[in-house]
Image (cartoon, rainbow, N blue to C red; front, top):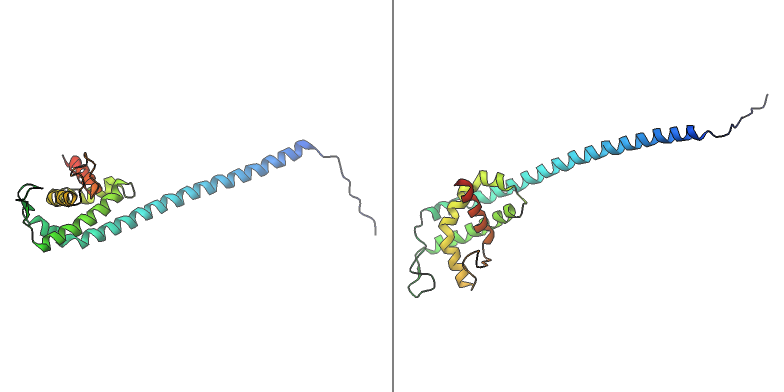
Length: 177
């Protein structure tokens, strides 16, 4: 049996550089492909989150549908000027309870829209007029609640209760005018 001889030639650094460059090309290509897939995944996840939030919003709106129709037919909230002794709530307890439920649900949904968790445009296309009409019906009720809590009555004065609902309703009114 003959012995095997291995001839080690001196290293050619230009060859090592070329091999390293090819290896780096494959690594960069792999990283680029993974960034593209990550972008697509994030984009799909955002759509999924938006659709989940819109489904939740649809469920919330369907829960208050009967309350909204009750408020539409309720008439004026109160008689007399707010803060005076002649001020008297004209709505029945059932209507006031419906107003409470609607104002809470609309505040939650408005917060989602105003904070950017739900697209304002999509949300206003679906329920903009409903929010504007609900605000028109509930404005005296909410002002009365603010008055009872010792809060300012308007947003300009620094009102806190149901402020996102008011902001979003005014935003929806501006879109429709």
